[in-house]
Image 1 (cartoon, helix red, strand yellow):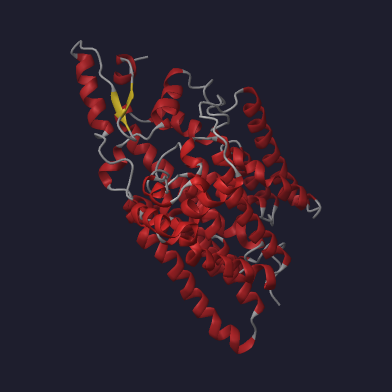
Image 2 (image 1 turned 90 degrees about the vertical axis):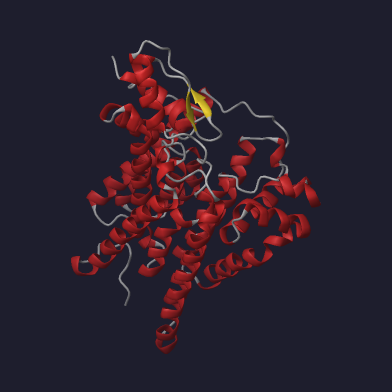
Length: 445
């Protein structure tokens, strides 16, 4: 009889999962490092400079809980402060890249123990653990920067909400992770119904986790009320726009990630272009709904609804004309945005349904069918994850064309020491300008 996921496994049964988590960490870190060319590791990305670096330089303590764009960014601000305090300014971009990649790899590894309650088959959890770094749309912007760590916190928060701690130490460790994730990603408010549902399980080890979640979400709600998101066009975005946008920016890019290929397909076929890829996820969803245990069904419903809701919420919170996807016809698609970074987070959650379905199949099958199906399902997961990883480079990178940060800082430091005024420092994307004074550049108090 299969051991209950609610009980702590013996040390003899625990080591394969820990070994799998360690392997996933190494693979996830190596993939991120290889995916972004070495020269682009030394590029500061958007808010990493204009918001988090400036905050850490100008107000190290006060900036930690300062809201930006309507919500808290606790983890990026903590990491930016640590990097500024411990590393030379010229190393800021490189250290941030590695710190961000390590955090993402840790999230991947943490998926292995967190998902065991809903996804008991270890190979399926290994596939789940790799998903966050191989989904193609995370590559152009999301890998290796502080500004998009909230994407990985969304994934982490979903699996924390679906987890079942098996010891007091694990419970409090997960509670801290829940607080950090919730204070970094406002869209984890979507997990409130899951948390309320899990309260009814009356498991004492869940109380710290739920408490950490609620404390973080309370901070996000307060920030949203006091410093609401703004600066957008305010154009009407409807449910049809969300659905068509989800098909073009979430479903299609998982297995057809080239921008031009997606645009041409939608220009000629419209939303039906996504049907073959959507069929893969639909079949997996049906397997979970029809044959899954109640735990698997909850997990399947959560990842699918979170995929749709996180993408839809992002469009509704950032209403611009380019997001009116339902109005696009024919050649309109040739200039459409189909690599939206919101699709990266939603794509991770959508892709999760495939490993969940594989675990369901292993749980349901018996005897000779199980012996035959298990290696087939394992190979299928390898093919699914491998296809996304193989195609990930096709999405390119938005860091291209920016001069290395260390070179710029060293040049400006030399100018400051020579008595000249510093010039703008350039950051990605599109060579945005960042202005720092000479004391900040040369490291004077």
